[in-house]
Image 1 (tube, helix red, strand yellow):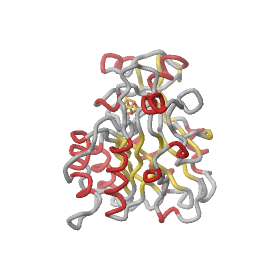
Image 2 (tube, helix red, strand yellow):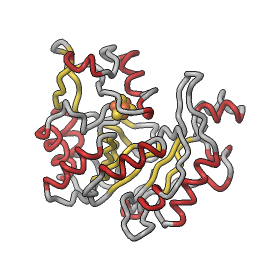
Image 3 (cartoon, protein in one colour):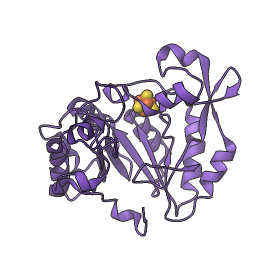
Image 4 (spheres, helix red, strand yellow):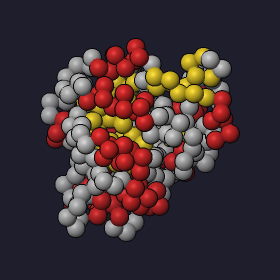
Length: 277
Ligand code: SF4
């Protein structure tokens, strides 16, 4: 477990790691959609880990194994601390077994005063897993990642039935959200899919990083405010920082001081109670 720069959480932890050629090294996952294009975990893995690309072709070279020491550390997290679990892979990846997921989720549920975040691009498996357990998991927040209209619509359709605490991560936010999908998912019409929204522009060094505009973020913030759902704007992204001329000091555009006033929202769910970030 380590302290993290992710603004809405205190620590990150990876209790499941890939074994490659008999050695626990680096991280692994397989890309799902446009949101994975500049995957941070893959970049770090290429640089410091087992060097494998996060592709289907490499799945045969990897076996996921639980790190019991890390699991124990997770079980001892202090009250009101927030931990992002498996930020370097996807806990609901098809190569991670139901038994392994169960061991991790059961550990998190066993420490009810701490808050744990998980995030997936495989919402159908997550929803099915949680529903099969018939436990409410009050301290675990089950998140779904989407990056544009298409992935949001798919995520909403697949998160059925929804777990008790859910969140939506629109990061990297690569395409404007139009139409009523988000408003509907936030409760317009009477049924709420997401209880909290995080939004942030794409970051990275490529010249093809998507430009996230303040207008896109304003749209998301506006929908959240209309439906009274807390929203956390994390960053504007690298391309916006470049256009704004602040990239040398704030490469991801994450300092709210430079943002238009209307999007300076960094709210967390009221259920988190006394949490201080
Ligand atoms: S699901 Fe997440 S960890 Fe996996 S490849 Fe995509 S961005 Fe990376």
